[in-house]
Length: 120
Image (cartoon, rainbow, N blue to C red):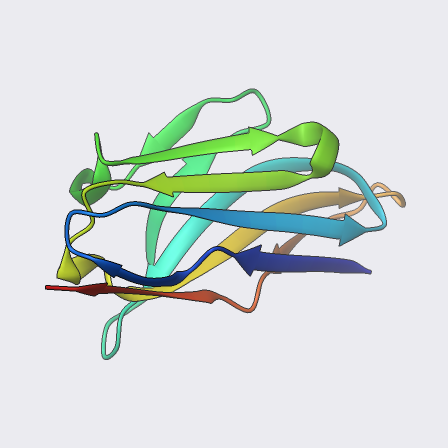
């Protein structure tokens, strides 16, 4: 019913920047919360940044002042602009959208993830 696709990952040197995108499509009435998570090898998945439908944002302490989350509602897209990247930011980054369907039911949809690798 809903497809969520991340893009923008890749290999970057330490200190560099990347912008991730996550686009949702399908039977969407509205998207409430839009979140970015990441999972590094051998570690649990962690919340990186979140944005509400009203534009309020929340960040993990480790990325405050370095990452910026934003959304473009007309395209059902959320972005994560990452700056001053460190090797510790290496992970698979996932998008999670809390979607209200055209049936007015609400559910969470995840993308397949995009790899971010930061070299030292």
